Image (cartoon, rainbow, N blue to C red; front, side, top):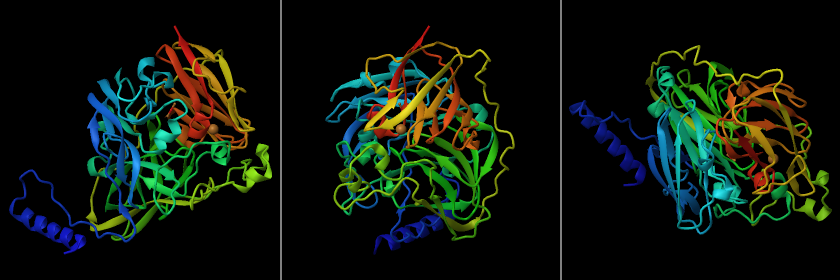
Length: 502
Ligand code: C2O
Ligand code: CU
């Protein structure tokens, strides 16, 4: 009996059994979906409570659907386990390092004390343990965590470390949003694979990969290539995270149904906003509701990244002050692997609608929550940060990152306006540690605040020629980071320290 026949017969057995014991605590099962040739079932990421948790970083052989690869994992899971925390609880998380190199984890989007923020100067050696303790004083939402090791953030993240951190709360719980089987955290990434799959990350020399970022050629969702997911004819909540090092996705559904945006980096929006396309840069998250109840049984829908062009963006290496030899190597990796350019279309996830009946659910509430405001006053202090990528250097205000240099001193608890401007020909998704900010306005380029930037944010995409104003306020004193979340740019120096002073 082959695997498929075996599964089908097990399915029948369960179905028959269910007739005789309908209420013994088991969930009713439907017959397993037929396997779509060449596609891999989307992995359901294991979920763990974060109240007391040990995460062990170690080299692991992992299956990516096209074969097995050597990966870096936390607790053996690719992607890393989804940590669930409740608003107001205390998190005690131990990181145990069984990697052959230093590492440290950062809780991206959370406001936590300096000692829990994962600054690279806190990285631990092989076989050491780091204890994180922090109160989950956060809005419920879709956050994430990933390594933040000095000049190794891109490599360790690319090789598989990183996962969701989901904060839940009572107010959100009462909205009746799709949950359980109908709530799907979806980690989107691209990898550069050759015919022999491998997650090996090259040593970054002075080349296009270091300048543009390490663009891949294969889309991954939840750690597998070519994923497929069977969906019922009802609404789903998709928590989307772009965990790529540099790839920007322009998300849309192939059946023309909207992505109904309900949340951003820092939790729910005040009201749902239906969108045909949503741009998701590295480290950004969106919470969307998708309705499959009007889809026909058996219909196949693709979540894709549509092709796009970024005005003013470098399309060759001519603008980078590089010679012809360098241009010749543009876009080519090692072996038979070649990168897809930024903006290339990619199919991210296939969704197959089941042939069961429509599962009726309550309508999506028209009002979700009230957004906190940061209280921007006319006299608010302003700071400007100019992001530049030139002559093989990635800088903020002309400087590359130095581990121990404090670049700005910012008063605790005061709202300031920070301007991020992009003076280069490459996109920069800018991330600020220490909490959530509010996007106020954008000039140049897209010249407006995008619908997915109306909630609270911790990362904002700044395209060539754009300037974005954000309101920031910090609630913990100490040393924190601001950087480009193109991880090759970050590791390459596009990062700065700021000290929050009481
Ligand atoms: Cu998601 Cu400093 O990083
Ligand atoms: Cu950048």
